[in-house]
Length: 372
Image (cartoon, rainbow, N blue to C red; front, side):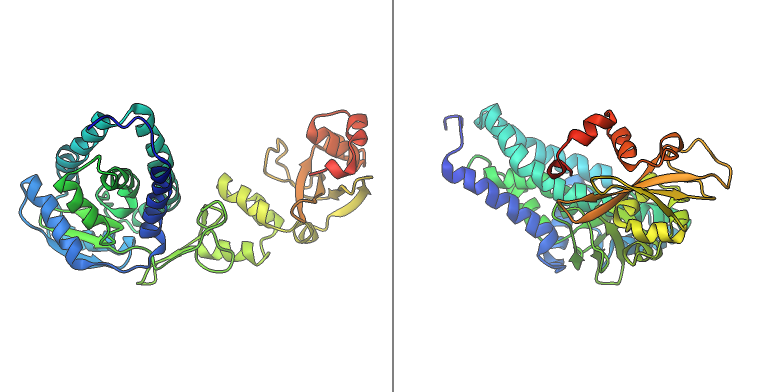
C-alpha cells in the first residue's frame, strides 16, 4: 500500500465526523454504562499485563470511586497497578498502531489528523471536563483526609482523544489491530473514571448532565455545570469552579464588593468580578458618582474603603475611585479601579484615557461608535 500523501475530500469530512462522534460519546450521549463491555475490556487489559482478572466494582461518580478505593485500603486490598496496565496497553496497542500509521501516512497527514481530531477532542473532553473534575475530586479527597488514588489512564475521559485519532485511521483502512478494536469497544462502554488495583477495578460512568458555554467550558448560572447519577455535583462559571454557596451568591448578585475583594483565589475573584453588576456592587459601599464623561463613562468615589486588587494601600478608611463603562457589543457594564491620583481629579474621561494608556486628547478624538 502506497503511503497516504493527502486526504481526500471524503476523508476530510470523515475527520469531522469522527471528532464529533467521540466528543458526543464522551460527553453528550448520556450516562449509560455497558457493564459487560467494561468488564471484558478490563479483564483483557489485566490479562495482557500478566495480572489475574479483577473484580469490577461499578459506582456512579468519580468521588464514589475514591470512597470505594479507600474502603479497600482499610481492608488491605489497595495495591495500585495503573502503571503496569498502562505500560502494556501502550506497548501492545498504542505503540504498534502508532507505528502502523506513521509507516503508511506522510507526516503532514499525521499532523493534520492529530490536530483536527485528537487535539479538538482533547480540548473538549480531557481539557475542559476530565481535568477539571479530577482536580476538584483531588481537593475533596484531601479535605476529607482520605488517601488519593491516582486515576487509571485507560478511560473514556482521558483517552478519547488518542483513540479518536486511531479510530479515523482504522475507518480508512490504514490501521488494523485486534488490540485496538478491543480497546475501542472498552472505551465505548462508558467508563469515564477508574482506579485499577491488584484485585479490583473501580469504575464510574459518564456524567448524567454537562452544561457548557459557547466556548465548551463548564458553565451554568442556573444549575450545577456537571452532575452524576448519585447526586455528585460541581458548579462552574465559564470554566472556573466555585463552591455551591459562593456560586449562588454570584449568580444571584448577592456578593458584596468587600466580599469580592477579600477572595483569596485570584481566578475565582476575576471570574466573579466579570459576572457581578457594577450598580449592585457600588450600592453596597455607598459609592458616589462624581463625574460622567462625554462618552458615558462614570467615575465614582468610594469613601472608607480599600480594594485589594493591585492596591499598595492597606489601611482602612482610604478613599478609592472607580469607573463604570458600557460595552455596547454585549449591553454589559464593567467596573475598573482608578488610581487615586487620577480619580481625585474628578474627570471620567481622563480616568478612561489613563486606563487605555493614551493622552486625554487622543481618547476624546476617538468616535463614540468605536467604543467597545
